[in-house]
Length: 443
Image (cartoon, rainbow, N blue to C red; front, side, top):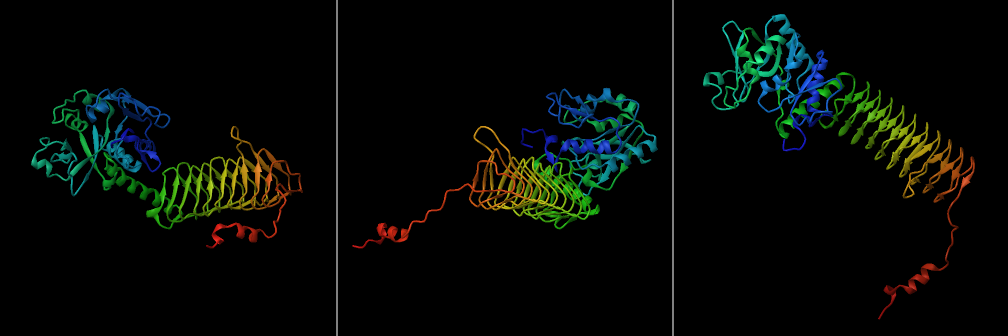
């Protein structure tokens, strides 16, 4: 990966790669999940609650990895899957486990046929259809030409009888070109091994570099988008819509092109989102409209409208029917029901009551160079254009501010706050300025 980040912790649609495998196992009904980590324990603290770590002291192959977790193996069936193959599904794992239990064998491996099986271990069957062995092909010399001609490949997913797996792991030897303990070699040490075929080659796609990660991301994103569309969400252009796996969207919501929905975002029903909109870790109610805007860690309630070109920052609450309009930035503020901040304003660390209208180019001056202070604006207030509120300051219910005012003192309810110098007009200014302008002299 050419990265300081461990491969399985690289992000894939809002979830570390390893977490996809863990999620599939849990959804498939696994009662216990154990992840094998290296001696430096880079995955410690990065896994879901309840997932246990087993430490592989040295990188001695896939068999060595499972052997590192052998103390967790009991009498129950054991599923083994790779942490860098994130597209495996719970349905595939359930099918594999059901086939294993029904077949009453010691092990069942998942397999599929590929037109180009290069690089994959080949499944060698006996005449009765059972699996004799899996032949690795990573290094020249591991497989014969006849074995390389086999198109059925090992998907790297296994279901084992617990006691049989423990016994076979302790008998593994590094008798191969790489000198490693190959987990597929366990097959040759068992008497009853079956193969469970499946038809989705994408489920076995591994990730070893960023090109492969991008390929897998495209497929994962397509699955996520399709799931939302089948659940009643309209994606106008799925190819330009990026939605994390953790995002929730209500029915009849329309997602316009070039929209990115990330993290723990929840969107209600009948909303219109986008185009060209990013929403991260935000909660939106029903019938919300967001156009050409950026929202992060905020809450927007029913029937509110945002944008175009608005920026809602962490701690913002936009209540029912409120509006954050064009080129409006709001941070850590509570905007009341039906209140409008139509355009060109910055509202930070403020509490604004219901039914208020904030004029154009209003600013809450919330920072004095040392501390942040709050501005309180009541209900049904009308502020005029170019008003600055120097916090801490309070504007009472039903009050007004005059244009171009710097409000430094509280404004009582129903009052008009004016804070600006009186206008002075200098007569004949243009004529006198013209006489002084050197460009008007001639030689």
